[in-house]
Amino acid sequence: MPLVSSSYKPPFFFRNGHISTIYAGLIRKVTGVVQKRKRLELSDGDFLDLDWSLTKTPTQKLAILLHGLEGDAQRPYITGSAKLFNKHGFDTCAINYRGCSGEPNILYKSYHSGATEDLSEVLNHIIRTKDYSEIYLKGFSLGGNLLLKYLGETNQVPTEIKAAVAVSVPCNLHSSCEQLLTSRNILYAKRFKKHLLAKLRQKQHLFPELIPDVDIKAIETLKDFDDIYTSRAHGFKDALDYYRKCSSLQVLSNITVPSLIINAKDDSFLGAECYPYLEAENNPNLYLEVPKYGGHVGFWGKNNITYTERRAFEFFTSN
Image 1 (cartoon, rainbow, N blue to C red):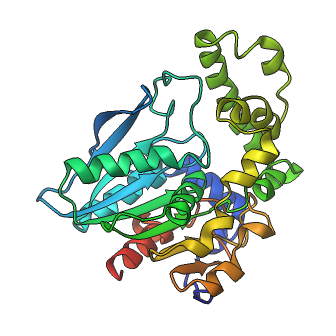
Image 2: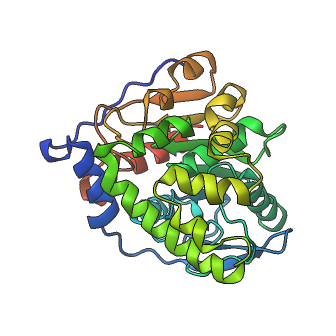
């Protein structure tokens, strides 16, 4: 499907990618969302905490929400999505990845951009225990890559899954990592590294023999973190091997479920390889929208409903 034209035209103030990113991440507030947490025990002995927001009347529509790097189900982009979907008759289930729900996970491994086995286990659990006839997926940043990789690598996607929307997606993880290592993103990278190292130190108390002090001291960049922890904990040779195997770009051509990618041109986290024009042009199920503005998971909107929240609802109800 060729490039989808975008109608996103924010006020002048939000035509700066960094302002959009910072406002959405640190300033925006969403109220009025009720979440009820349910713990899913995983087959490998670990757990995931799922935060459910339900409509007032029974529905057969469910939107599953996936957060970004070092996010959680209470981030405004998650609760804002849940609020809009609930208003329009969708239940929502927001997944907190391993170690992201406020409690350290049990195993040495945690989460990463390509951990589709966890998403698959959540979906299988919901399909087995609930009565939803329509399931929709919406992911942000890392979560967007995760859901696209799942849809592209899965031999047979469950028929209940009707459509997906992925926002600010690092389709090529190496390309995105290179951008995060540039000077224009130094503050974001420092913030990510601070949170990742704090969790790694928590995990060190559980697995001191696997995470020695010398390794933690050697982590100076996000790539170092992926070389020293992510790759080792999840069976990859090194960071580059992890990026290569877990990037969704390589499987976008296989996607059979209607899927919309919304990546802003001014997203400082994304390199040129993160805009899959060719893949979208050659796959009738893959839609690519590239607004001029929006930043990273920004996309300001009137009445505290972001542009991508509205677009996701429109896309889901039309597929």
